[in-house]
Image 1 (cartoon, rainbow over the protein chains, first blue to last red):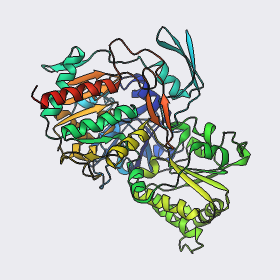
Image 2 (image 1 turned 135 degrees about the vertical axis):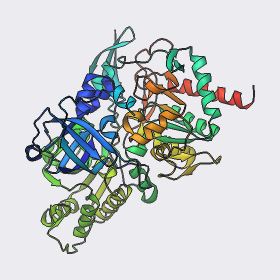
Image 3 (image 1 turned 135 degrees about the horizontal axis):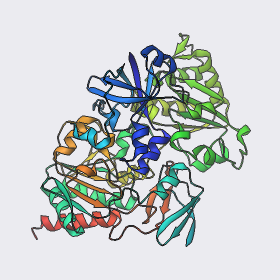
Image 4 (image 1 turned 120 degrees about the vertical axis):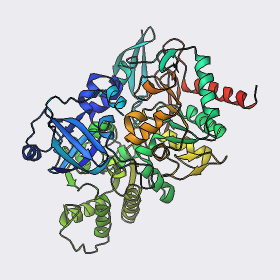
Length: 127
Length: 433
């Protein structure tokens, strides 16, 4: 499924920063993806299951969570953080600012049942 | 046990200055008035803390004395051809000033976290100026509040209660005295409490602002919808903006990070300028880190530029896109880095992070961070506004003196002291002493 990715601040992500980047609260709140109900049905994915979000630069495995902030169909929302930054383009269009919002991505159900979302230290050591 | 009142919170750009903090034997035990972020920051400031300087030896970080860490940091910076000095938004204005001195001394590039939050705001206001005011003026006078691409109920938890719809101002006493408009791509928590919610399509803010400017001039918009918004709604919003007595536009990363970036802010400034033909209208960016505005302001005093400054020619060059941290790192141009009170390894795109890790890396931070895990030198620091004093600038540009109320871990110094130590050592190395 094609989607537009928007990343942003959430309360859980912000609190996670203060509890530490290696804390469980940060991991639980940031390695997630909010989706519209219609899109979840179309993709055949339920809350708590894993999806793979891909851009031209690679892919990130994230857990689908219930959205309290009503993401419109066709848009997915992921909190700012290292998991989603793995697939962000570094181009800044002469501004210094990469595009962290409004990115075209491909979303699919994570095929491997053994797949797990890597913890932060593992994520960066994978290269 | 001692209770401090009127303490300023070092979390976000609101710098709420009414916090009550109780300290027992140097540790914070109770916090009143703060939001969830504030409470979490104060009560967990000793969690995941770095308490001793570390140096990487044979691929392992080992504990060293502070002078050894400072010496190694100074050596790395003076040996480098083009180091990047990045972070600066969660420290004091005084430390930021020393950062500029350090960048000039080593001929490096210095950038603050503005470049990945309100950099586009800063670029636009360098060109056009920003029609702003203090938050106190908004609290007392504003009858129309707009949050555009900003979700304060997740990001700036007390902004609405202290300054906008929940605030009791001198002339605006209650919620009924103010109208709230939210423009966002999602129906956020903030959107749910708004009187008007305008749902804009991603990356189409520029078009919506342009259509609003046309509607103000009663020009015909030859479309049924612009950026996903029906033209009748755009015209209604334009009327609302023109007919208010004092309008305040607060905007967030929804505008700065989306397509158009600084040009979105150009357009927003032009909109607010247009509105001032009919009424009083102001705009204030919703700044994130508590002193990110201070980083811009101090950079400006010293160099004339607010972020992304390159000293490699001996004088300051400002060219966002060339001299900004993400660009320098993703092109692999730098050969060392000093990161202070920031965690780019968690926040930058992958290619920039990979290049950051390829070269010698110094981290100054109170916490263990993703960046510090891979650093060659780690120097622990005290929390500004909790364990040491310093000046910070609120999102509206008001400077506030932050106090030190608790004790840092033994032997841990403020950023200012650490930076002075590194500067002194670099100058000694340069003299060949």
